[in-house]
Image (tube, rainbow, N blue to C red; front, side, top):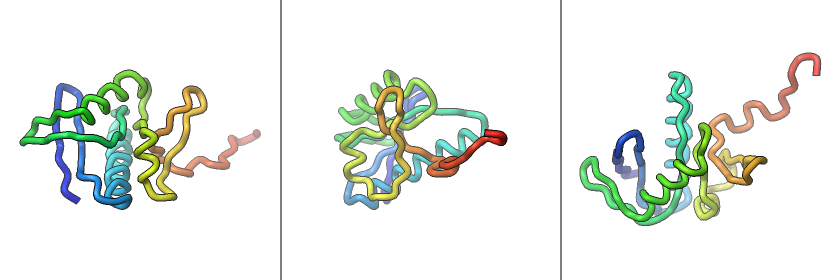
Length: 124
């Protein structure tokens, strides 16, 4: 998978050409793994996954997808999570760890997957 990375202030984008669902899954997996690695260091980040046009040259990135990803992160990922737009969900293969927030209805990558599904606190 050929990826490109761009930076703007505290915003980092990682993008790839969307060739098929496995390519999209790999990028979603990379984003979830990065989220976990940063969380293990005590850095809880926010982000978004979108499909659209983007251009990368060296460390510079621009285009409608970059603008949309930034806007989703800024306005809707108000706590640590990586929001997944509906058209991204449609191309991700079955089994990709995605959850829906019950408060706002947005879907997000769930790096912990089913790790806590069925968990009951002691004495509950």
